[in-house]
Length: 341
Ligand code: ASP
Image (tube, rainbow, N blue to C red):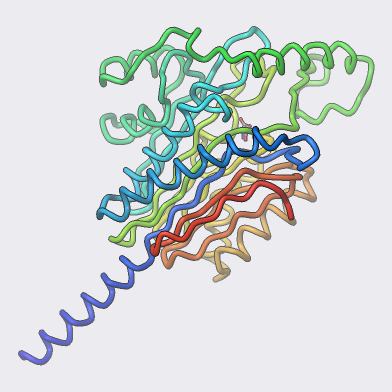
């Protein structure tokens, strides 16, 4: 009996130690036409700094024994507070010159999830998404309702002017100009109605996301975005759609996506990666590659994902020219990558 007890506790502590050894955090800061050619050393340095800061923020939490949920939320907040990424402070502008943000978070332990869409006054949408998950009976809240809930939950509310950045404003002006030019041409790829064509500036996706594995062996995913420049009619992307841009399940993986949302929604990207692992026994890399590098490519859906499994294996595939991305492992070794090669 004593021997059995000893064996069981030894096994339990070995399992815990393995989980502790595997703490891992992976981030992305958007995919798109990111090439060395259109990058300056200063710009690259600025991006790398924030991405490293984001990695360290999440890692510190995990290292201290914090949960993957706390880690993904805090990590995404760092990128939301930076004007460099299309989330929070740096959110892109809609056709009407507003900033409408979407965000989601999911807990792989119990499949709980929370998301917000089309919010305009919440400084850190990811934290409100978490409140939706933990403090309400719902999964998704939108617009003014989500903002009222955020206020009630003590979230920081800001004037919409907080989200103004010159770079994003200029991007909208360019998109509006290009839209005028492109009206004479066919080739719309937005999935919008032909007689109500929306020209979405679709080559730069700056959404941010994070997936993490904590010492308890729990996975979590978080994604936050301003959507796509020049979007109209309350358009919502894939980021806040559970199973599309954000998904986490301890049985398989945690996923956060960036790219042309319409394609990611139709391909149910996050859940498809998880399903390939669950039903076909694929590893996380094979599953993520199958969806991003095959299915999405065939469907002309541009973008990428970060995906992490319960053992700390992860993949960061993208089918665009570049993707801001990075990871940090249990031993603190980390890397930030931007280009394809
Ligand atoms: N996926 C986001 C959207 O479609 C855009 C992005 O990744 O930047 O809203």
